[in-house]
Length: 237
Image (tube, rainbow, N blue to C red):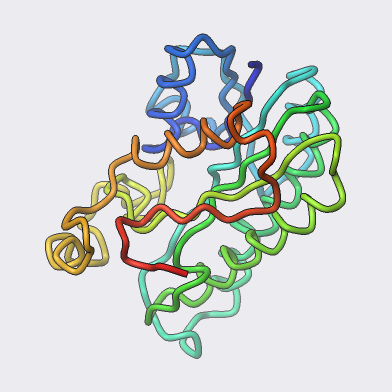
């Protein structure tokens, strides 16, 4: 498969790119220039900024025909009650997570060959509310709705699904790769978090990349419009 991974320099992205390459897929990474410089991938990479949709359009034109697209982009902010979000931060979080997913879908869905697939990465927080993560949770709930809408509108040509992980121990918990503060302590007690999960551990990147590759492949050929929860049993819809 010819795959494009948006956010391929992040913790999950690097694992996905490595696993896809080992499986023989041809992968192109899209990410911030700072992220590409910080974690240079072993595959072709194009610098984009999801806050500038024209960079996604240009990257789509340069990538040519593909078989699959994965959207891993996004970032978090320090926890706070919804009513205490500065309006500019609320807008930035929705733009960098939900609106970015919309622009990426518009740019790359037409490039996906018939029978291919698009996979968005959402979050369990978009389905199971937790205090302090309001803007991020709303944006990820929107990605689940966007997934269902695209699945209907793009069928039967391509499939569209979403993977919704719980917390994964990567720099994303500190804000996101390529953003300030990724080396800071996470906003949650990871030991306490793991103790509350039935499988008694926090997720690793490969826990998420396996389901992504499954949804991209032929084994998921009759699956579209679905949210696949990957959370160790912490949330069971």
